[in-house]
Every structure is written in C-alpha cells, then in structure tokens.
Amino acid sequence: MLSDSYEDRLAQWRYLRSVLADQSFDQCLLDCNDWWWRTPMRDRVIMWQDYPDWPGPWDLLNKPAFCDLARSLGIVYTLLLVERKEIEEIHLVQTKTTNLVLINEGKYVLNWSPGTVVNTHQHQLLIQRCITGQDLAKRLR
Image (cartoon, rainbow, N blue to C red; front, side):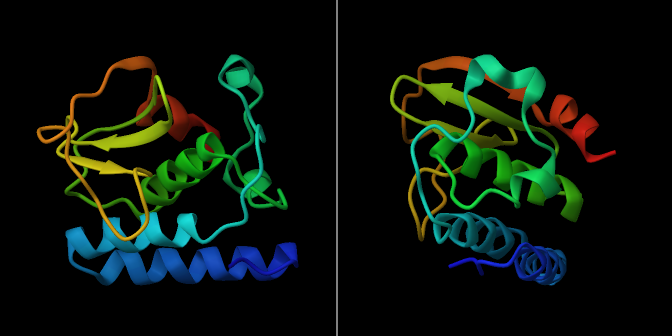
C-alpha cells in the first residue's frame, strides 16, 4: 500500500523503478503489476474522454486513490521510465470490461489481475480504445 505522504509515494515509486531495472524481464513485469495492484482503489479517477488532460506520472502519484484506468496509466509510466529494452511496444487499451496494458503485441498483459501477467494468445480481447506508449511518453517531459 502506498504511503499517505506524497513525498513517501514518490520515494517508493523511485525505489520500485530501481528494482525493476535490475530484474529479469518477466519478474519486472510481475512486480510492476503487483505494485500498482496494491494501490488504493476508487471509481473514476481519470476518464478516457479526458485524455488530453490526463496527469503526468508525478501528478498521478499525487492522487489518493486510483481507478483501473489510472492504475494502467501508472503501469505504463513506470515501464516507460524503467526503459527496458525488451519492451518493443506498449499500449494502454480499454476493453468492454476493463483497462489493460499490452506489451509487445499483447504477448504480456498487465492490470488483468494481481500476481499474474497473462497474454492475449490465451484470451480474446475486444479493444475499444487504445493509446500508444509513444503518445504517453510525451507526458514524461
């Protein structure tokens, strides 16, 4: 669970990113997913139609709780900042029921559930909306 203090949350997130940089790729994805699954949840922290006004990563961490879209966005920001060479592409997608992070054409799917990283070869996803990691990386500047 994240600390109540913004400064502590930033420090926890910085530590997470340093750990992820040194792990195997599979463990990196799993630990990133699990870290964001431990954040407090609330409905509608951010919404798809407000995409131009979505918070950058540091503003996102200033939120007291996260919806599944905000959690997916946090996962994307984390992985973009870790800069793992194994990530060829990353997408934040909306399906009929949830928001997910697809890595390398869906070979890895994050924000599906805690404790697991699945792949779309096992699951049929009907994607309704999609934003690329390249578009979200612009918010890191």
